[in-house]
Image (tube, rainbow, N blue to C red; front, side, top):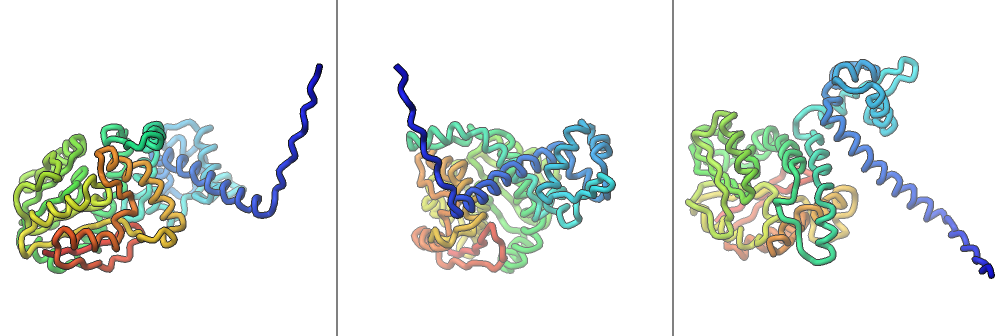
Length: 361
């Protein structure tokens, strides 16, 4: 006996459905082009295109030691997305001058490191999915080298260009203290680029970086040796929740508080280690405590990276799990007051990613 199967009615594709499907296609394409851009960075394709004029796929492949067929397809993808220009008459491709600082040159607008870091986050997707089910987190030890190296490369542009050229000029009291020769601590120092740049710019100072990630501290020590500043910069593996050794004229955190397991406890420790006339320089995420204010591509990125790293690593330590947008200005002022700080000044740096605070006792 044969049972008839009733046909399923086709779902109507309304204009609203079609419009949203188009948007999702664009978002999906953005993931693909970001992945392709990361490959271009890793293989040296962007650097070879920069300043080289118009190249054929064969010429670019020869310059980079890569397969021409793959390069041809990669260039086609980048041209389709508008990252490179294509001349259909000559078959040549050009990287526009305005795209070079974003894709091919380390600097404040450079995205190559961020693309590498985001690729690294794909390695913990399984752990994150498990955390959704059991409410745990993802430990720092689970993250691959691409995440750490990419994050370092992305933030290097800030420390090499924005820190000396934009942020410190906006902090005259901090600048003066550094010029005199300050004792400086960087909490959550990562691979040490901020302190190394400070030591190069202000050689009279004494600099100490603290981080709980041993691999980052090891890399920071090697970088200080290579930069020739190891005589005045040291890095220590330290969980600052139990206190910061010593006392300091200037203490810095760069995108650290929102990641902390105990943000209020960390602020109290920093307050205790800061000398009476000292300055706490805090860089953190430019977000709002109101979700409607965080809508759009940047806000969506912040919440996504929060799940993949910021919130998850805090929860892995049984922490507060503030998340990427969690240490917004509203929360920063409240927690700093609870920690015993006197003034919290938002410094005008007009940066879409970050807010800079100068905080005093």
